[in-house]
Image 1: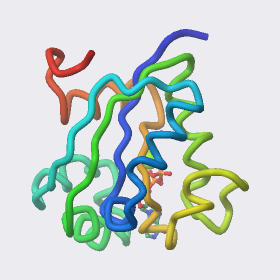
Image 2: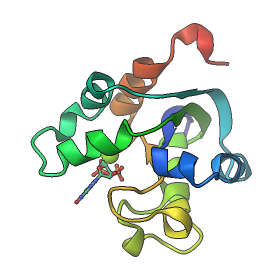
Image 3: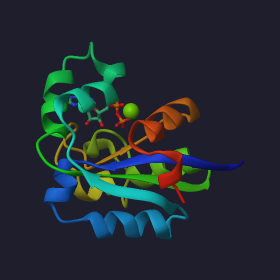
Image 4: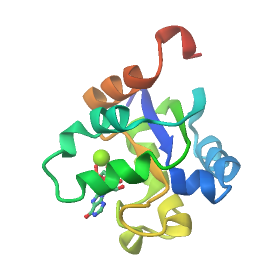
Length: 139
Ligand code: IDP
Ligand code: MG
């Protein structure tokens, strides 16, 4: 076990629902420190680049449209096994399958509008963090 960093996004539905504070509270209570954060609005190219790994999936265009419809909050979370810990706090991709007490169970609308993103592995975390933050913006 080691201290890690992971990339979190509160997606447009989460910002619209007014739960930025609630989500941050769950991260901090769950042992994750917010090392960087900012609100941005992604354009189509930025969202397509972020989700490039999914570009052959049937939901890709819809996902990009959703992720660009309003502002998001991108953050770097740091802590013990932060990547896995954040995925536990978020819950399963499909809120219908997410465990009780997870962010997605409590707030997500459906499998697409599922409130939060979290990196899934060390390599993707490194790429995703650098996609939004310079080293000098992470504390
Ligand atoms: P994850 O966010 O839990 O890692 P991924 O499989 O990496 O899930 O999918 C990325 C995002 O694409 C999901 O968070 C969700 O917003 C969207 N997504 C995944 N599967 C579907 C689907 O079957 N229909 C519509 N959107 C989906
Ligand atoms: Mg994923």
